[in-house]
Image: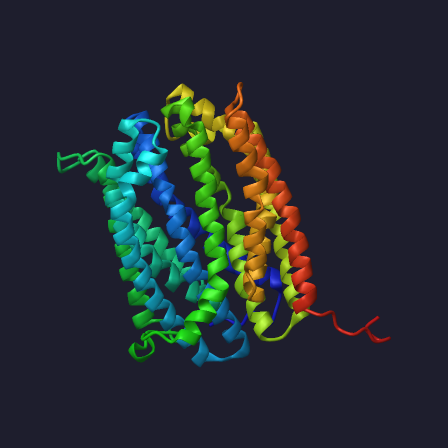
Length: 453
């Protein structure tokens, strides 16, 4: 366990954010590797895999319930130097992970076909997406254990083991993808199903490696079979903090689903271009997400240690760092956005749609970074409802306007992207206001004396 209640907050932020960012880059490569090899199968395969991959947002919503709840409570316990409480939370998180994995498999296989029929542009896209999703579901189910164990380590101030596991699993995925998709060496190509299977096998290997780490090397928290039975008081603590962030990711699933639905009339090439562009955008967001993920355990340990001044300092440091990085990435997307897309497909129409998407959507990068940082601080403070309210505001500022525009004559893709930029800017302002109010309530300013004044 690393004590984050002492020393430079900026050094702590960099030390945690760097391995988190590297690990998240490799995590994103799961989908990008699949997308690269699937792109060789044509536009229909790209559109199908991209649309099916959107289901990952729903699973990420559930993994956030576990990850955020366990990370925040373990970090606060570490700040209080309460190891027993940290272990109780860790083992209860494992129990929740098992239950969520089983639920994902049951509901996923039951609803995969209906889901793809609802958002697929045509029958071929629906077939490709369903085939991919069936093979990808075991990997989605295993994400719960992987995220839970990584979040527990992050709460204790440790990020490197998670990064190493993510690196190794992506390398395994890159090795398996061409073998299973194109039939290299085997002579039996599985197509889009091979892409999903390669990812599932790689994630299974990652779970095994993390389990080995906790069994052999981790000393602060660990498996205790006696604490695996449900303890409703502890489960309520996890869910109270974790459910609102899960709702945030569920809303992202809704927003992405709305986009796929309204652009379906523009054809498979439009869905493919948006699919590639949105995956690239997620990769671009990784530095801001890493900063937010790093600031959360740092701030949470200081909340547990009752050091409000350091909690405020963590937010200022993270906000400036994330905004600076995201502004630089905004400029990069204004310069040559097509370079980010052309690496995955050589279809001119798909490249054009993806490049236009990135060029316009880049103007909300700084605002998105601030939203992520505020969400991380809400997690540290132990009240994540304001972050959910901020995300839900886009139902009014994005979903309703886009649905209205899609019913008008002259509706274009550019209108969707511009409305998205405006809605994220408004969300950032709302998040900052809500965080200021929450910090004033939970972190009262110290009384000023003549000496401190």
